[in-house]
Image 1 (tube, rainbow, N blue to C red):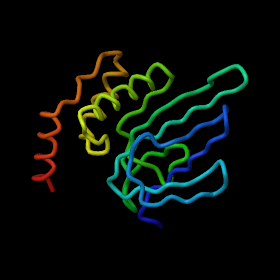
Image 2: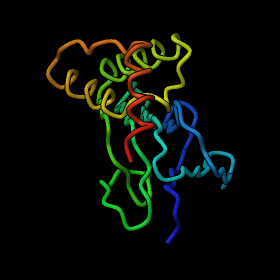
Image 3: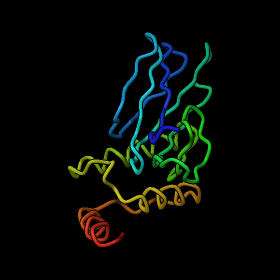
Image 4: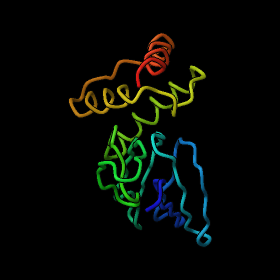
Length: 154
């Protein structure tokens, strides 16, 4: 059993696009011109976007913000992700996916790497979107508090 979480990425022009929006990979294996597999170390946070279309337009769009798990740890099954991951946020449907992408852009506009954002913030965004409420913005102060808390927690 590997210590990494593997994500299969697929790109078929105008049909299927599975890609990583943010995340630090530790491995990148090209299978063929349309498929590759990337790996994340345990504890790594990454955003996985999936989009599918047919000749009439978009069929499905989805974004998941996930935390890679270590060997033998509990995880949730996610399509294209082996063995699975800790789900911090899920948004389904283009309007919701677009909101999450805008939130990621806003975090990055603060010069904060999205992989460093508090996992609790991504859960907050998920809960607010499900309740059709506006999530609180991620601020520099919130980020500094998270970094301090992360240093003192085991």
